[in-house]
Picture (cartoon, rainbow, N blue to C red):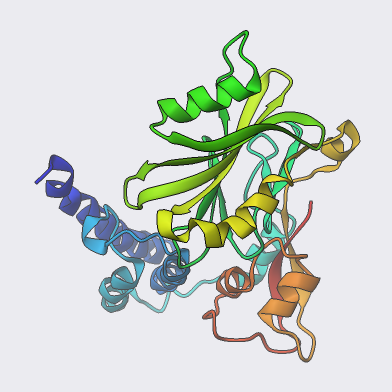
Length: 312
């Protein structure tokens, strides 16, 4: 047993203690302590839709749903006639227009698209895939599967053409070459190849990767899946790779961070229709429901004012 597993308990205990202290401090300052378990309930909904695949016993943070169960009985200990203040309307006014999600420096995810105005690149992942943007890479996953796509930068040694850069980079990563050829993506020099290798937690995989030269930078945009499932998912990976392009200076200057806004629900609206019409697909229906304190299967009521994410 590794030391990491031995010490997981302390991370969990600390987290539960922070929930208790949050209720205590809130109550002492006149705020409703019941807001803490309500907040944890929101985290539980997020966790349920994230499909992280991390067993609870191997997590340094307790499952949010279990934290709700622990925190709810504690509310009574800190409840009082004076600790009842909420400020929903004031809070709504304060966050109207606030930047949501990624910054221009990290690039912007909009639905299945990724735009980086500073690097001046744009691409699209398959529709319906979940996209996560980090400082190191952009990763997308087809929900409920081990089908992934990613974008990241790679080193380009001086004097090497894009074909040799691609082959060398994949071999250093432990992948063998199945096939590959020189190509262009939106006028940019590229090498598109198919490779075989192994990934922890997935096993043997096959990957289709496009290494693209743009100025002094090389980007790899790739999709992979378990060996036996690759041919099926490659029907989506191949077309997605071809969406990689360079943003023009004008396009780059027009990219703005996503922002929070409000929308009044109309008769017949659903989270799905609001996500597409008001939010233009920037966030999905489940995320909108959770943002507004609903279960993902609950639909909004006509006349309600709900939070949405829009282009900045």
